[in-house]
Image 1 (cartoon, rainbow over the protein chains, first blue to last red):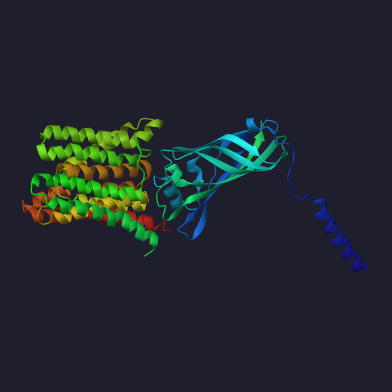
Image 2 (image 1 turned 90 degrees about the vertical axis):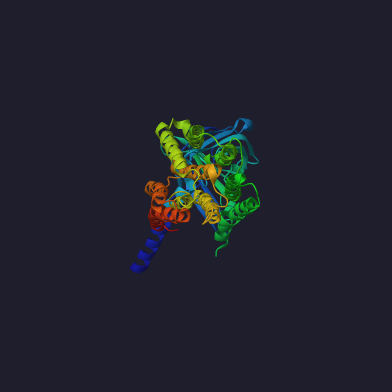
Length: 199
Length: 272
């Protein structure tokens, strides 16, 4: 009898433990405001086709910039991002060197990649498109990202944060990166994960 | 062979060789031998441009990147030094032009770096090396140029940039045919124009490799050590032309093989 009571008590304790620990949840407060990009919670990632057999990822670890969101005046929304090219990492030093050299990014000549928005169109509270000019490898081209607002709300340090995920596919040849198109795909998927701290 | 490797071989060797060979075979039909050095320059330039188009494929003026200046530099060199081969400049004018073009070529290639400061030392050194290479090899028929170009292709591809290595390979392929055409008997000599084209490509690629691709320094320096082989070979052969070419080529191969071995070893340490 005592054993049965002890088992029941243990089960209840476990159950209550699960209930007491709050689950992760998205904050749905208003994203309105001007934000400075938090580089430690933001990143640019890309995927590129390799020799027709795989899709290989890479990332840029450093990022800076800001964004302004005003749901009432969407035309005032703006995003500005700057990425140092030498923050590239593909998990292999030799490949990083190849990519940063004149074959691809030519980081000595073009040390930064920038994006400046020209328009944001939200079709609902969380999804929309972000249009702007991407400057990469010394060439500026218009690019449209699909945009998803992840959440917004207070952080534990008295600040206020908001975050977005933007995705697009660019063609590297549009930016003058034409080398080895037969071995490394022209189309590159790009994903921008941004978290900003309201100013 | 992997399709990508086959494609690279076609871009680097097959099509540039075909273009250069076609031009040189046409040159053999010329009755007036004075035009043959001009044909040699056109063949070298055409072969390189075919490879450049297939490998890099970007033509813009002004060029976006340093390698984009190579076609324009080739055209200027062919024009000026073809006139030299046909009409004959005085040595002083020729040297002055070679000096000016060495400085201009270096400056154009280093131009993007001027945004962050004036690379005075780099500009002075590269102009000097470019000019020195040109003076040492002017009018020679490639027993030294070919191995140095081949070595530069290997060193660039393994320690710097695959693309620059491929472009270096194009130059080596074209100069290889040029050498074959002129051994043992000189048929389509490089002349001043042909040397101008070959040196401009070689010096330009080496400079781009060092300024933008961090190509290994020691193997490149060893490649330059092959240049005096020309003078030494000339001295040892006692004016016997075909022997001179063999001795020059063999002497030049020593530092080139060492440089290539160092570069390949360093590459294999980080194999894909």
